[in-house]
Length: 110
Length: 115
Image 1 (cartoon, rainbow over the protein chains, first blue to last red):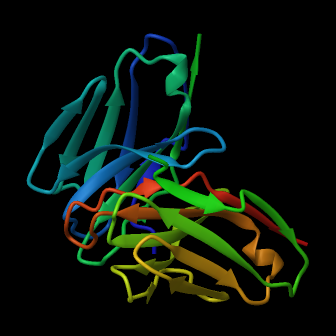
Image 2: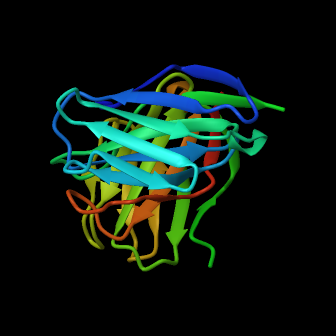
């Protein structure tokens, strides 16, 4: 069954603002990943954070992981119109494949 | 470098018809996956292949079969399509899977409509 649950389901901000989306999960994990999906396209990997890490950065992306609360957040700083997409968290546990959440739809308006 | 290539991109079937979705990757990845994406449901795993010669069921395998033809190719077959199988299907691959750093590379998707 699906492991991650993103919040909010939809987010609308203006260019230049920061966007924060959250992911909660239910069981212990080995790593947590974030993916982006532009409309009508496949998913693209953004960042991976391991269970023993608390924070990770990649360009304008900042991911945090709190294993005690079973939650993660993705922060996109200084958002651009090109960041408009759906964002999914995915967890890897003792099973083989990744389990994806239902996604957060981000709209960045000029 | 094409990555993961899926064919066809679009397909319309009638209930009861059969078809095969093709997937090929050129990254020498060991593991391959088939997901379906439905509105409000996110991505759900149908089948996966940890390595050439092996396949395993995912969360929603009923109504589907798969074949790992070789290391590059992983096909998904609908033997008797049903309207409930209307969805967007994504193939993905990763260098490895399981507890390793299984970062997935996705294809562009195949949109299937069953009437």
